[in-house]
Length: 435
Image (cartoon, rainbow, N blue to C red; front, side, top):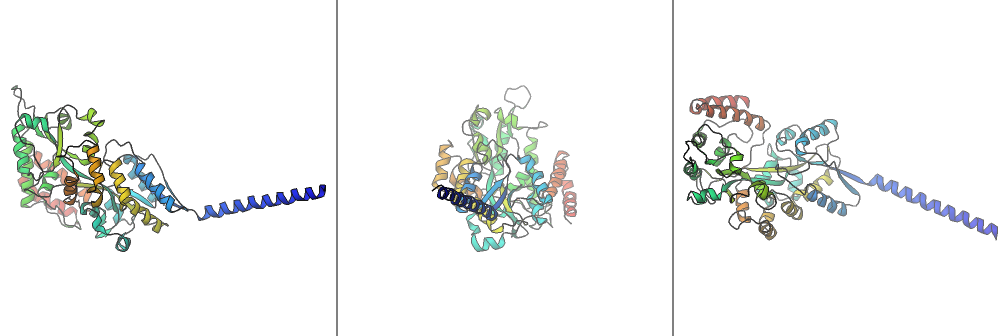
């Protein structure tokens, strides 16, 4: 009997040992077959405004993806600020440890596309995505040399913010969609004055409106698509810049700033949708603009009904070095093409979705009402119109540095009141730099 019990314990021990060994073997091979998808993005908003939901949209997308792909783990490095992200991404690329899929800084897209760091998405899009679901302004932001190297994730149109109290005090009607840059100038001229008769102007028409916005108002293309030709010395550019000179002359030698607007002394300031969605509702409204009533309308155009909306867009791209190309493409679609993700982005972020269907949805309308926007200010139809007519910056390799050069030269000529004389030379200098 004792021997039988000993043998029984022996066989039980052996059996349990085999079970443990089998479990360890299974876990080992399971780990071996688990795939990892590395994601790169920064914390906070893409648009420089407070955001209390840094990771919510991304984390929800990851949870959905991992649920449908049990053998895949999506990982990312948290806590990278937007200011540090570009350097972080560059270091990752140089060291060969770049993420499989990552957000692309707007200022870096042209360079990364031109140096082969981003995978072309053309074939994937042809096979599985209808590009018409996106707003053109958003979709074209990810295009380089007629190829698609990124998909849009979030957009941020520019609007004109209005101090309603100031205009009503002056007996001026609040501008509506379709107003012109001529209307803008006339109102600025009317409100710019010395209100307390002490000989000093203390109420102003605008701040933050610059020559690039004036050129955009006239629908001018400053370069061809490939960045080989510049078009600065044209009648339309001259007209836009002369309007800008007239606007600048209204306030004399004083440079009006955003603090003046905050104090209720200025009628207009350009503001992005992200800023408007952040500072119009409670609680940020109390800290920012609580002393006067304000709203926003589309930017003024060169002519009634013209296209003058500048749109910034954040992009996601796939590394050209990824070993998980199929997985990366699936996850990219989940971020940028999936309506649930994009609707969640509009709900929890401050910009706009890049999908037409989301921006015109009943849920988007309800969200805007929930946030307390007036029926005549930020509506789905207004946002849809702005995004549909949005202006996209060119994406040739040297665009950013060329525009910095142009800004310096034109700003200098305007300050010296020598624009008419200098514009031909500016055109030549910029054209030479493109060669």
